[in-house]
Every structure is written in C-alpha cells, then in structure tokens.
Length: 159
Ligand SMILES: Cc1cc2nc3c(=O)[nH]c(=O)nc-3n(C[C@H](O)[C@H](O)[C@H](O)COP(=O)(O)O)c2cc1C
Image 1 (tube, protein in one colour):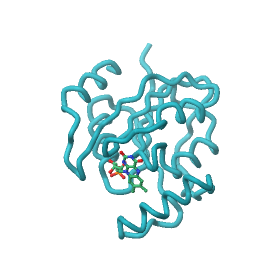
Image 2 (cartoon, protein in one colour):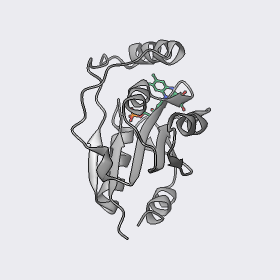
Image 3 (spheres, protein in one colour):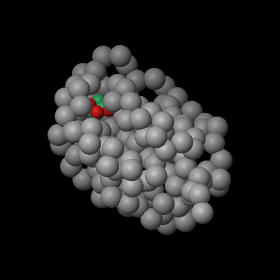
Image 4 (cartoon, helix red, strand yellow):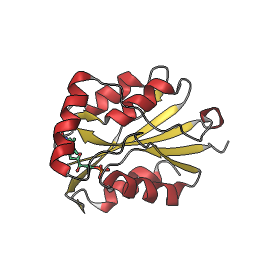
C-alpha cells in the first residue's frame, strides 16, 4: 500500500527548510511550513534569547492556521531546528493543536552540535503516534556538517 506523506517543518534561518525540501523532492507527497503568527526578529542573537525564554517558560507561541487536513496522511515527516536542547516552540504549538495519533512520525532535526533531549521530547509530545528514530543533521551556520550520504540513507528508507 502506498503511504500518503506530509512533510511539515518549522525553520527560522532556513536550514531545516532546506532539508525538508530535499526530503520532499525525493519522497513526494505534500509539504507544509509551520509559521509563527508574530515573525521572530531578524537579529539572530535576539532570537536566541527570546527562544530560551519561550522554551523555559513553555509559552504557547501562536502559529498561523495550517491549510492541511492531517487525516489524509499516515506518515508525517516532522522537521524542527534544535532550540535550547529541544524542539522549537512553533513545533510545540503544532503538536498541541493537531492530533497525530495512529500516524507514524519520522522526525528530522537540524542543530549546531548540541541536540540535547530533542528526540525524547518529540517522542513524548507525539501522543498516540508511532515515532521513528530521528534524522539528526548537524550544521555549521548554513553549512552542512553531517555527510549528505547519511541524509540520503535516511530518505531511502522512506522510499
Ligand atoms: C533560539 C535558538 C536556540 C538554539 N539552540 C541550539 C541548541 O540547543 N543546540 C544546538 O546544537 N543548536 C542550537 N541552535 C542552532 C540551530 O539549531 C541550528 O542553527 C539550526 O540548524 C537552525 O535551523 P533553521 O535554520 O531551520 O532555523 C539554536 C538556534 C536558535 C535560533
């Protein structure tokens, strides 16, 4: 049976978006972006501090309504940057607003080398879903640090 797949991601500075697009190009299905209602500042350092507050206080960051009906998908490829050793607040809001139970979730995360407890946190936040091992992509700024081959291998298991 052919799986219907949604690739959905949040990305502040474009790294996770790039990986999402790569995955989507190879796997097909649909692609959606989680967008905060209030855009983050352009100033990276400000975002780092704001992000720390949001992660620590578990604020509910508002996101724009998504134009997708999740009931049509059995595979969710979920992309997030690591923010303060966990997944980004925008993804937290997405997971609290949408029911992924019964689906298989394949997380992919980008980070600068400190992934922390991101993978475990995603698992706990996806109640009722079956969560597969995450693809962890290390970036140095906007440069890929993880070998392309590792990403391609993860993608090939979805094909
Ligand atoms: C608010 C904030 C917090 C971050 N915290 C971490 C972290 O805990 N560990 C890490 O390795 N990288 C951290 N980073 C770096 C990002 O995870 C990394 O640059 C990621 O690839 C950015 O993805 P994006 O371009 O899709 O937003 C942080 C970046 C921001 C903006």
